[in-house]
Length: 108
Image (cartoon, helix red, strand yellow):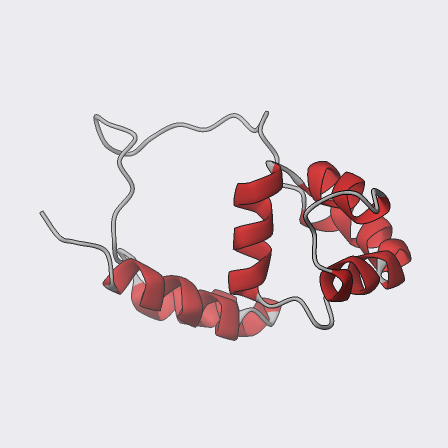
């Protein structure tokens, strides 16, 4: 959303616990939310309401693991296929940021 970057969004989520918590803070003039962030969040209320159901993560999907644990790999098993899918769905930039973040995690 305009004016709230990834780092600020992560900080707000950590501080307020959820998107609904952030929205409640934006609507509460006594909250610790800065005036600038409050104004941006309130101005984007319609966008947030429309975007939330689109970006919500499904928590009830039937998932089977391909390994004995639920530990996720730090790199794609088939990076060429991942690149093809990312390009097809227009998420190449997001996939690149994800891999960059994974690359920064400590290895085993």
